[in-house]
Length: 385
Image (cartoon, rainbow, N blue to C red; front, top):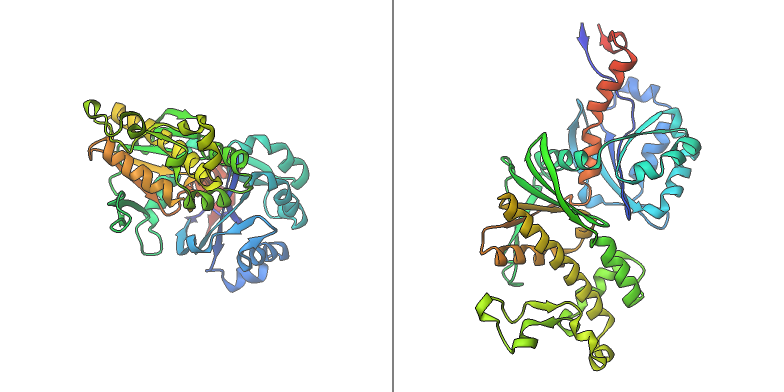
């Protein structure tokens, strides 16, 4: 008698955040002729729709460059796809699930994030799906450890920036996380949560801050009139934050040597904006850059203090705020190295924004094995002769 667990396709992991929904989809590529013949039309339709498109509607995106190919997952071989769309468009996704008869394939969908609670009723009443809610921080830790073990299509998943302060010499360098503990994890989404991870099953939330990616985008919308995160980042890349910020040298005429504060350090974020002349000359791009620097510096400062308090020297930054945001990553890398005098290293992941969704996907067999055991305590439905 050979036991095996049977998981019905499709396999999804879902992280419903305050700003963005992150979805992982496992596309099997080892389907047998028998399975293909028995495959129902609704399943074929879903797979074709998801893998044949890189955009869904006006806001849904499949990040093709992040796809993990020829991945072995739960005993099957396939490709892992990463899809994202704004949380305010979740009702459209729910409607699509109903139109494509998703409930004929599944009755339960594994999900994490605050939206798994907020939108639970809509999934149940509109799509006839129950959300199996997984703890957000459990998914974050499990996803981080799991995704690093996969490698990014032959490349290292984890990396750091060498010479972050020098644009000409700065370069990404692979970092080995085979022995990850202890580790400080800084998850930058709409807000920020900071976790100290001591082992696979032992971690704690140290602190957090409400000043995160949502703050950056919200302030940029108010100050510059932009509409999207990508637009705000594009503006920031062209701006000069020193036109808005007051620096140490603006106050001391140079360095504040007694306490080791260099003249280029920010003394007061947006401090120059108290002057009408400065306000009249500052550009939207400068304001976007100053907002980015303000939020990033605050996160870096809190992360540094947490790392020192917990006696941890490796800090992994993840979350939607860092998606295509090399400016903040390099700023975090330089700030941690400079202010800790080389004692702290800032680490990043290729799949920085998909960690929790991947964690939900990775925890699927743990939930399914429990669910199957609860439904079939004798194991009769899970035996293959």
